[in-house]
Image: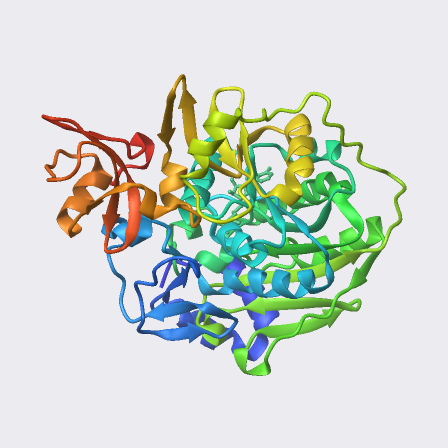
Length: 450
Ligand code: SAM
């Protein structure tokens, strides 16, 4: 068991009462290994118990070496802690009665909840996935590209910047940075970072984040607030504070008793708590509230000086070949990069580009360089890729790993651009030359320690 601070033990004793011993014992047990499949890609895992609140996720009997698995690099699945998948369960219910929902995942890196939310919103809604820390925003962008859907915009902003985007989102997901008590079993190093001062610091930071983001939520919209910590300062007390500042209402979320989630109503608000001794997961706190305040604010979208350019006819005909499907909506960035956007949300993406630091918008599928059209990594990972329109280089496991590690390998394939495919799953692009192979797998994504 990690060396638990006395004050933490006392706190848990008072929260859990007679369940305290069972909780402490669970900290000595193994964390479960769970993956969530990408429903639009090949499913490599077939054995394992389903996560009760997510039918796309499985508990695996053992832990594979994920970083060496080509399917992991190709976005066939995401390794995600099971309790976190409950956020998807909630959002799925919230969007049932919303036409074309726009959702903000405000603290999104590395992207567990975001890839889940993008899946739920696929061909229905737009997801804005924000991360304030630049290096983490790039990891988020990588995971979203690999996932292969085109309904995500990634921003790299501080929560305070969202006051420029008022009454815009139907749902605001705040998976707040926290003191991490719920991760003590999985990441024992987080124990040494815990202190009562750290809890207070986190609680104040969470209030600031909520205060900054609140105006961006539409009247009638929903806030989903979560932390992976147990103390009440970062959880119930913040909710109490929120309901004193703003007009909020309760929201009913359907769930099954047999999932063993601690559920309570406090001041009429629904509160869910996950504990490792009950739910075969790490710890999580989640709640949902509805914004009841009125607002007469209207976002003014004008497309006089759009960020994206129209694509010239000849280029469009060739670019269309990369993607399958009828309604292909492509736009070009000033730097020549071409993105596959969700057409219905085009005006919203332009609006966001004028207000926020947008670092990714729909799937980047190709670059137009003079007469050349060069397919990009985003196209290889896209669920819309038209595989049949490319030369294909089918590779075995060892060659796939060399490709992903950007190591040298040889292949007997057509000269020119080839799509590298491992057991039906596209991994990326190479250019076969007479005496060498150019590897276009992004340098920053390469498999290390192969
Ligand atoms: N939602 C993510 C997922 O499912 O993969 C995990 C998010 S983690 C709990 C919290 C995130 O908040 C981190 O990525 C962290 O970088 C970010 N963060 C840190 N300080 C922040 C701040 N002041 N405002 C907003 N986000 C912050």
